[in-house]
Length: 176
Image 1 (cartoon, rainbow, N blue to C red):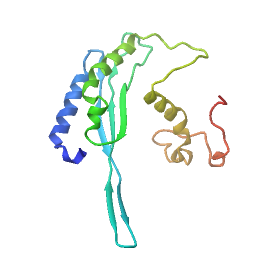
Image 2 (cartoon, rainbow, N blue to C red):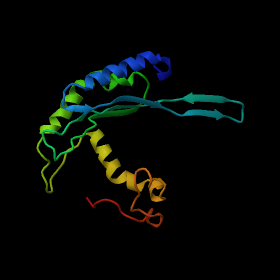
Image 3 (cartoon, rainbow, N blue to C red):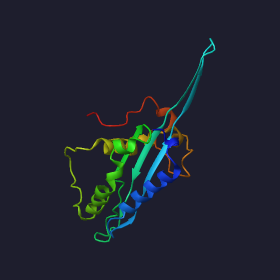
Image 4 (cartoon, one colour):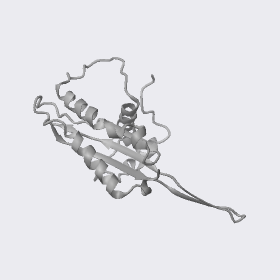
């Protein structure tokens, strides 16, 4: 079902309920439930007079409880524990379990407060696909964004060590 066909009140009511459900523990001091929808509108006009108009939508779902780190003050516990993105409409909420997620997202966020510190050293690591995507994006993607390389992001999110003359020549990452 297209996002535009869902009444605005239904969207607000769902997000409000999801947001309330994320505040499942007093340790959670900040939280968010959001849905973003965007999509291109394409028009194709042919020499023979044909016209094709297409509109697609990408849905981005984010949950973000932020637990208080009072039990371990040296650790700034913060987590966005669930997110999903898909080229889909309103039905994607059910496809990814959006309506049932606040309970386990909040529980996981609070559990992070008592989790042991990550061990140091060289070892194998298993990441869920959404975390792997995020890790690659944060570790490598930002440094390779042209707006940062050109200095356009410096006032907002920082710069990059990559320079224009490095593009296409510089190896970024390990051999393995």
